[in-house]
Length: 113
Length: 109
Image (cartoon, rainbow over all chains, first blue to last red; front, side):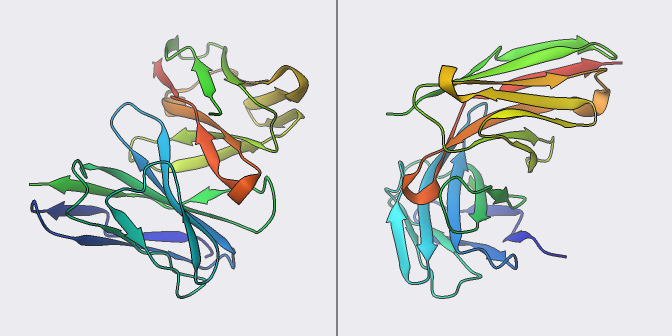
């Protein structure tokens, strides 16, 4: 089945640690995105990538880093510089072009302990 | 920046009732999507609707791009319709989505 797989579903991090969230898609989509959702809020864009080996900052990129070495994969690292990392993280992908439909993975819930 | 506003923020329905959710956006739209976020957090695609009207079972959506709003209609609501409904507008640069704050729907049996 084609889709977007995020892992793990739940992640616990100690303060001061970096953690990496995985996002893999087999939809052959060119573009991939990371969004953050806080309780009771909408989604906000962290980073996005339209092609391999290229990515751009979104609205709330501080404290996060990404890489795009393969078309299928777009991992997100939450660094110790992110002051409030506890949130729900959603990965999305879409085909190239303007206004194309985006599809989402099931999300990773990150908690700082 | 571009703003997307949804109303009402909360909606409580009796099973079988009909309802309308609204999404206003501050700029022209390349694409407008409606999602349903289930209790486990996953975003389910409902409609991809830059303009016009689409229907899918008990749900339908209408986007009037010239007046910068979109409506989502839920007819004969069921308890499984509960959750949060988001609209999101696509920006041309980077195909990025800007989300509204969502409408929380609770359908009571």
